[in-house]
Length: 127
Image 1 (cartoon, rainbow, N blue to C red):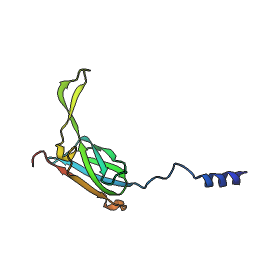
Image 2: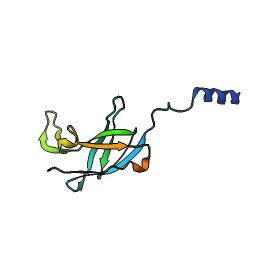
Image 3: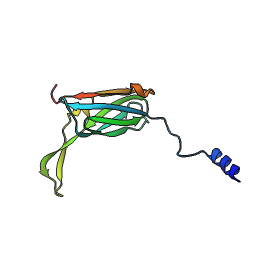
Image 4: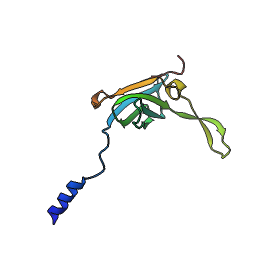
């Protein structure tokens, strides 16, 4: 009986369905020489059909898992404007210049060798 269960489980597959293999990407993000304390980084695939992958930036560091390939990279971080919304919440605004997010110029080539997937981004508010 036990062997039938083992054979049945093997025939049906075990665990979660296998999807595309993702690789770890790490790095540091600074703005004007200072680590971004809290933000978000998104690796957008250049190839259509692949999903974007993102991770939180904490103390200037991030770790994300994504499929290999050419990526556009977006970096965002918000701070309070000092104003209140109609609901009483503090209004937040992205303080990272648009050339690093909505009009990103940042790119990365993620490989299937995790040892080569470190990308540090040195951002500047002024050219």
